[in-house]
Image 1 (cartoon, rainbow, N blue to C red):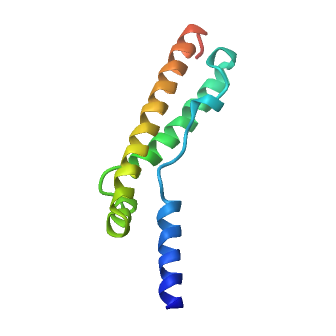
Image 2: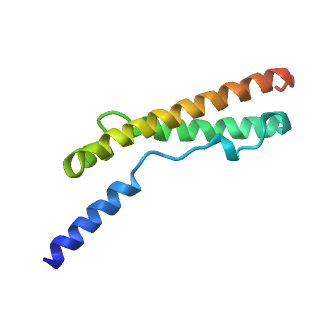
Image 3: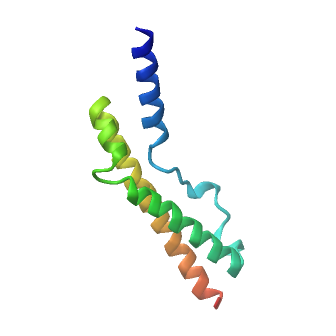
Length: 105
């Protein structure tokens, strides 16, 4: 009984740790206050977040584990990934406009 409980806790921990990356633009510095270097750094950071979300989309190990042990988790994980990608793309578009407006090179 204890072994089964430990196994389930281990699996639950692994699946919860492998959820979609979190990103919120609400805590990000306003685009108008960023320097050219900060814009480039922010775009690089966003590219990493987007790549992580893309890797966890579709038939990924995370979604397979969710589907095996708790199928609604796979749906929620997929929706979270799409949400993160949409937010990252919107922020990146703002940064690209600011980069052009500030004549950064």
